Length: 305
Length: 322
Image (cartoon, rainbow over all chains, first blue to last red; front, side, top):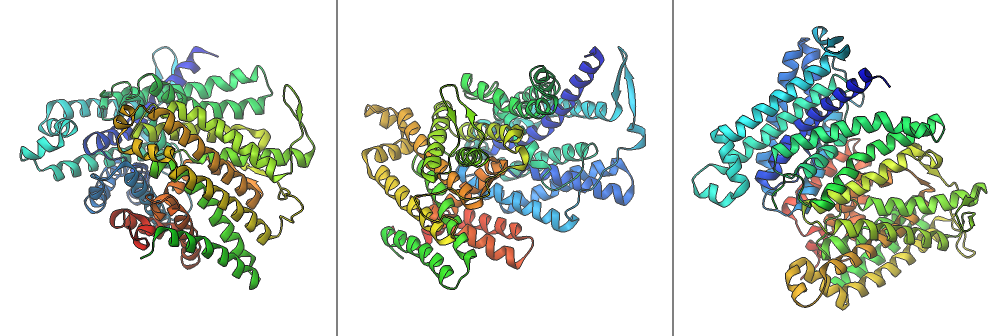
């Protein structure tokens, strides 16, 4: 294998990692601040992709489509949070799992009803199509590079938001002591709604960005959701830093396992079997890492003891 | 309002009557529905042992259901095509005997429950939910990649296995077999819950420290319950293969784990056999809504949300008096 191919795959892994980070950042904040396990987070990924694809079809403008992928999920997030999710904060995890599982059914069926059962497509804008030559003779997709850059900016933006703004201080206070923040006269339910909408918007953005590479279809959010859960458990629930490191770790591990395991199995078995076994074991690798982390650090890498 | 005993009796007799009616009016589909209710009910009750009574929210119980299914299906598959599995000490030819395949399914799911449980039970809360999910996902992807047994397409076994000289292909006969299994499971779970062990398990859910100060080991107690639950869920999986004569990775997917939790909450987790009522409501709802509208899952979702928000004790909480 050439070094170029290796680096290209490494970049793919990092791109996948940043996409996972967009999903997990919201998930981990929602759990950290409100104590909610939100299985319906994957639905916002799907809603983001569908709204982007719808707006792109209507206007032909990719930037507007991306904007829509932030706004629509946030609006729907606000609606759902203030009508249903809010009632779940004081409930135990079991009720949360079940209610948000039910929300997946509702969102998926509603989307299928509105857009039909066939996948939609979202085109990469002309300016981002094709490849770019990176230093070291590495040819890499412009669009994927843009995803990496967007992810990087959002990570930096979230860092400043959490550590340098009033909202960030409130979020951190909410994670540490919900009772106290209420006593201090901060409008806690408004804070909850903002955090939830922010998470939904980030998930929607991730959905739209990925929707341009894959197809936009019902059920596209759930596989990513499950991986995002793996990410936040590895990183330590509630920690944005943990989510970033966990996401990059999983992104690179998954992509590299997909590259190397089939090659490895080809040495000992025939090609078609090696391919299917290799790719299925590659899917397992992320879960294996999570189990290992939990065995040695039961609250994740950056989780509170 | 009914007492719990009367309630259980009515539920069980109701299921039996439902399939008898199906037999009398010659509507085998009714019997199949009743069989499905019984099998999912067994799995739901098994999950409820650890979920409702042990306080362990397993989001990976599809793993044991699916392992039971796959083990039984693989054994039947080999007995059918005559290919032997070369185990180190002897050759295994597969089997078409229900009893033997159930036994295998239970042993395998017990073993997996022991391994998964001994790791998972070290964690608690959301981490327990996620680690059980992670293990189930591993088995899911493994089954997808295992092309020898169908991979993504699943594995068909074409005929039902044999039990003594009963014609298991007749729907009513197979229903009665499953019903008998339900009765045995009922007996076992009842005994477990009302034994000292059951009381200690409930104690672990309330307060682990207290149990420890009584000189008990919560870890062992919870692990034992986890293994019992996994074994019974595996049996349900094996029965499900006989019902459908087919198994696919879907039975190991996280959606299946979610549906098992749905059965438990729908019926009410406070009562051991609540999930049986949950299975009835779920299957009939699926059936009824599926006939009325194509988007039945939407309405199922709405109903589930309403139940979680406004009837936290599940449907059985409405019927049984405390």
